[in-house]
Length: 479
Ligand code: NAD
Image 1 (tube, helix red, strand yellow):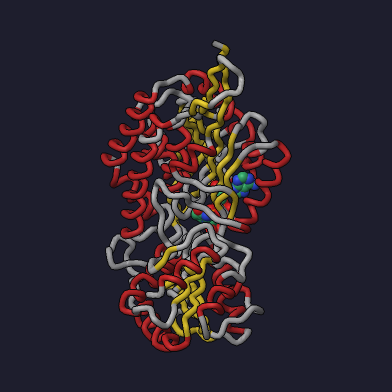
Image 2: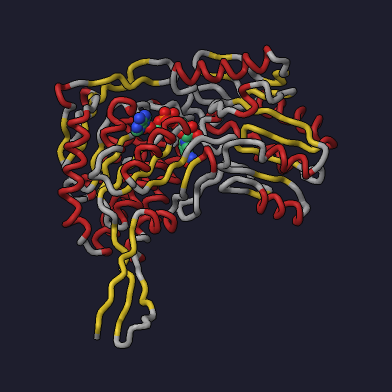
């Protein structure tokens, strides 16, 4: 059975059934371009969440025992159906969260790769034999799925996060309860339709839509979940971390960022400039790994600011289906207020807006700030919008020190031809990821993706999730 797409009221997917929320409650899912109604969506309750957790728990014993071949076949079938439904997914990424077509296509392609990479995990759920001091003993470790995995995803890359985390959990034999962002629920509903069509058993994947603030705790504090993976803001991540600590629920937390890019005097600006623009303005800065701080060695500083201003002035802000459009609307009134507050605070305290700073409806022009200091909110806090600050530095050492002057630690980048400085930076930057002569925005299915400090705990990716979403059991046989 399909969700009620024809009337555009989207339901939960629980135990293989499409269900209304308890009492028929719904909420409005708005198109951020003009705040028009995109869809009505089931507004889940605690009881709906408990129903989903029970469905996942009930499905687990049989699902755990499916063969690797079967799970691999199901995941590859998901990828096939995703390809057939490319238009639906891309349209949803455009109209539900305001993705420009370039970003929507990038996300679709990446999402496909995530599912195919997960299919490759199924045959690799491996333990090992272990030498034993006890004569005549065969000793081994067996890798087992954990049980029910809670997946909580953000609005900005809903397809990448859903495909990666749900597919990785299912690949190794877990069942899943998914709470998608209230700003991107339809994307997960389409994914659930695809999973159902692929033939996954009822209850293997469950989606409960609704307000995270209302029903998040019903998921995260449940004693019936065995692992939790959360991607979202640091403040919500901190709250979840405390709940997980109380319940001893293992988890990975992928949180916010304030990622730095250091550009040394020997860098080739012809190569740096297009990458610099891509590393911050893709999806209008609504990327956890967006570079929101540029530290440029003084000999290149003026030229960098001049060229960057010219580039950002040309970034398209037109129709989201026009391939030249780069700048997206900010997702919500709350987020728009935050971006405005960061820019106004910086201006009031003496920063210079060298490009952008104005709004066209719900879109903020790509904005470059100079003269930013520590008193300004934008200096240290995540803006999550098309805003970045450019700072002059007098040496590599100053660049490293300033880049490390943050409580976050997600992505980082350095542009230089000096291999010693580049590797010194990679070793000494307090971030989970570092790109030499490449932009901070970079992700692949099989890499250890994640951050340190306020940016989170743990890593995700096929290898990392194999470790995180399974547990080793020690087994001996006395021969
Ligand atoms: P958010 O924290 O507002 O919401 C994320 C998810 O948490 C949503 O699904 C929401 O429903 C849910 N939620 C809200 N309250 C909850 C609660 N009490 N319990 C459980 N779940 C709850 O974040 P957002 O605005 O959707 O996303 C933007 C943030 O996500 C930014 O800070 C960004 O840096 C971060 N992010 C991080 C990564 C990463 O990999 N590190 C990737 C993408 C986004």
